[in-house]
Length: 382
Image 1 (cartoon, rainbow, N blue to C red):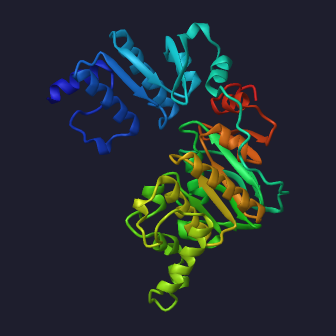
Image 2: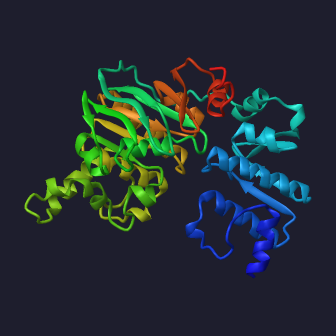
Image 3: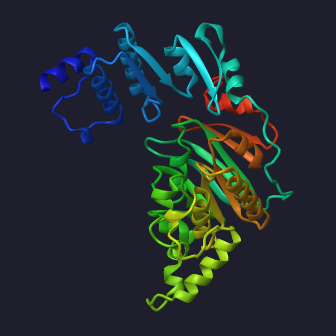
């Protein structure tokens, strides 16, 4: 078995010990092992779904070499990617899907990057996103030259009260990792975070929460809620010490808090004692948002706030976001849905491979311009 594995890895010109365990390998090496496994089964079709999202530039170049090796061996490759440079580097033919519907296909030599962007964007932005006529107030959050060893670099921006700041980018752009640094989940290597003029040093999420910055994470079931617990307990979790100053659980206080925020967000449940896992995705998201709003933050970060929820719940979340900014709260919204970003944000920051590559005020940029920036097109010229 080891000899066979070594033969395949050698064919791919990959230096990996076949006796090594996967947990000791880098993400790039794990990708190589997955490809080697496909070859071990003599696969004639290899599907690669966003394979370079978590790879460094050097690892990406190595991966290109592997793909070319597969092509020379006569393998048919389905390469799924949002990165235009990869598509034009590796593909012979393209197929574009939008919202699960076939749009176009043809030879790579017959299409330009700009045309491909236009086909991907497709339709006009919906006018159904609720926007309030709110003049942003003073700066509440200022980030200066924030860097992380591997995820992002030289991030600088300001966020004002009563403002929605949108972050857009493709897979691997570093948006979520930036939000983790702002909310104390990870620690930046350099740079400065200032909240109301005071320099912040977050060693853990509790530090950010106490300061007034909270984050509704992308993975609500894994990171945002304890889904086996009731709605009331989830909403009250960050407030346990305040609700129970003597160390004795006070059910009445917990219930009042849950009732206030679950009702405010129109969570649909037969009781606040209902386990979160029994709710729809949209109502689960409302519970997570309510939990953090109950801490009365100054800045709320919403990472993919409408991911995986129904249209009605999306509209409710959008409406509530507008209400928050009208009350003076500062909102950061990370979204991979371009219509949502363009429809809700007052300003849009575009990230590509860990860098800020563009910033637009609402209405300044077209969908094509934003997608082009997120894909790295024209970045060198900028």
